Length: 336
Image (cartoon, rainbow, N blue to C red; front, side):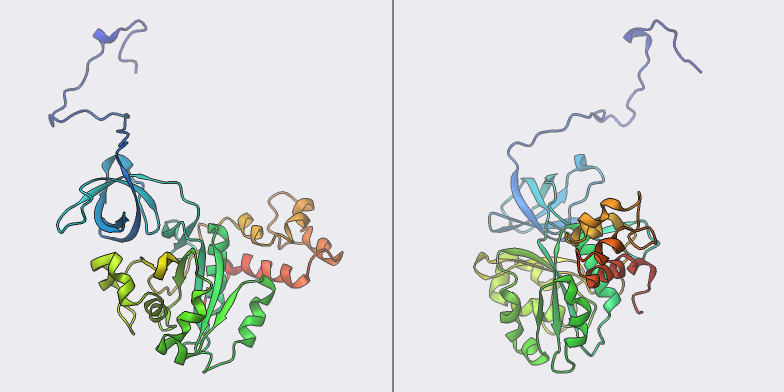
């Protein structure tokens, strides 16, 4: 139903009074040119702990950001009280574009994705060789999430004194994934940190793994108490020798050598958000073979051109098997 005639001017149009008495909404956003860059260290119930010029600043998200949320690892622009003193609160007014995103869903049927960490360079997948038994399907899912999100994977195998790593390494050998093997003695004494640290230099590394594999213990040895002073009171989130991580937490390595991000222990790693077409990008030796694939090829069907590509000797058959194993991981349960 048309409320006004064809020829209206501004005087003909009624405007609703603002009953709340506040200013009307506008699409014009403040520029906040005085904003200072910071990094989100952890998030807790709407409060974000950020590092700004080597000071820990508590902040909240500005209203103009709308539903856009900042997560651990985000580079943000902050205004307000940046002193870092007790009971002060700053505002996050901008979130910089992300270079990588590690995401997961509760399960494969859950459309709601959760961003675990942003801007990480690599994903350290911590798995015990025994006690608890390794879960290859969970490892596969973490690998898919890493490839999809733009992170380089790193396998960290713990408790090698209880079981040999050969069988598990054989399963992932054709993926060319770097790995580190440590023993329970090294994990408890802190020696494992020396073995792992050379893979972390100059990078932001997110650590994932289910409870009991020694992930948080390893993170605690990588970032001892004296190195945690930069993050102030947020260090209480983690505890030595027990799993107490309830939210992701970024911690600095000694000598500005990089960052580690401890994440909560995972029981499942849903992949509802993953676009299967992105997984093959982690297999550059197979990508040229997809040129002859039918449109929307799943790379695991009779007409897939990769079979002929591999049969002609352009790539190792084991690489194609590894790709298809990862692509089908959404169809399998993680305990398989």
